Image (tube, rainbow, N blue to C red; front, side, top):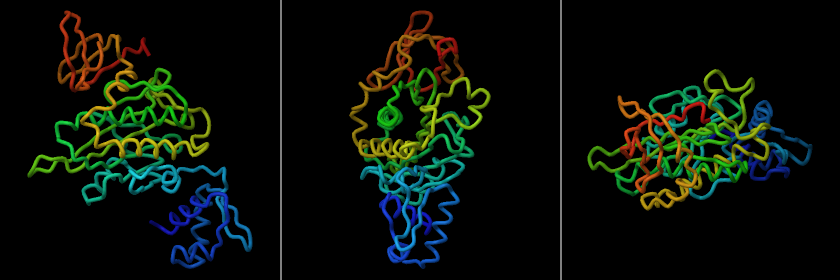
Length: 326
């Protein structure tokens, strides 16, 4: 952690109270000049820091900018460490790097922007600066490989619950990994895993989540504008909204991960299902067909009825809602 990040963490811990430059220097084991430079760098990033002679520095109570310190303030014990990036290619890429290096479960990578964010099937995930929050959590579960298919649906329920807590906005889930608010997509989830070749056991799982908190400056571009929905119309950091959302979501996932095989989220996943009763188009491998969604099965597959009256359980594939139904 840099001196700037350590100074910010101290100011966040004592938010609204003054800390002298000398106290900060002693606490961090650096020079007063290093503290001063860190303060100036934070101010340049937009942090509202008040400096008063003989009192020191304090972070304004109303100052709400996404940072590792802000996320830590709201995170539970299941989140063991937090790494923040103002801009990164992909939080999933970074989380996988850390996991391969042996980082503990509960490691969280958070970003203000992704330049190469990814969704399922290698699709690009639009991740602009200053309006969304993008984060990836490392899990090291002890359950069997066969239970890994339930991880994404569990993360979807946790994210939906966190969004409703922070924004009071009802959220539905489009099987298997998209969250919808007001009829449009507000969040996507990408789960990736590494398997130990010798034993076939799970080495680690990375759960990546991207949320449209507010509309980017100038609005969503092109085709994204037809499907995307923001959760709020104002400042994305009002009340530390992005930090609280990342922290709460990661905490729910991390602290409940070991129970995933029992599918404690199944009823809630069903309750939030966006697709029940809808006519949809299905892409399954090279097949494409229309079907009516009947519901979510106990194994979290999607039960559909084809036009010839036959039924099928989908364990993979893509399901699309006609634009006329959105």
